[in-house]
Image (tube, rainbow, N blue to C red):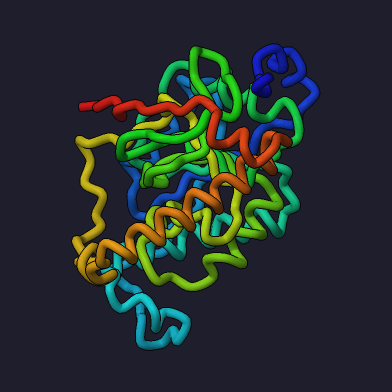
Length: 272
């Protein structure tokens, strides 16, 4: 029987308030004000985490950025900002934390979904609450508001919102210590590091498309090169085997159960 989080919401009163970090440039006062209003409307309180400013980023003075040549300053700054939040979660010993970027819309049922996820020890490294692309994967748990927890088979991309566990923060820091690709693309490759990265489907956090992200195009899509048919097939097999092992670890089932488990495929809702 697939695990379910439904029924755990009554326990939320026993859980300490969920720490919330909103990644935002210090100078983005209007965005901060808008995010405060949206959090208050959702019944949540958070603290702002001062993002790294790509406009003043000195890449020459940072040898650890040598592998980020294909990324724009904005993408590097975004990557380093998320790393900073992960570091804070790890250092504070927080059991879990909600991480948001400052240009997001929050669904009305975000709170019950968070309550259900936090009502028992979080068995995942990271739960993606947002997706930029089609959501495809294996269902591992049921959530409130007719939502499901899914282990991705295709890249959802986007780091607009996610729930992070303490152990997950430590493992993510170890896996992604140095930027080599955009942060969301790095997390898309969770399976290469054996990380348990799942997503809520449909999403409960969405990108506000009326706001400019401020991240310039980098050409990273071409920087990875063109793979031949054999290389793509090999990578696909490796990915499915790795994801199957993560699924087995999460669900406590046989490896075969991954191949017979229910799959989900959803288009991402568009928020104008």
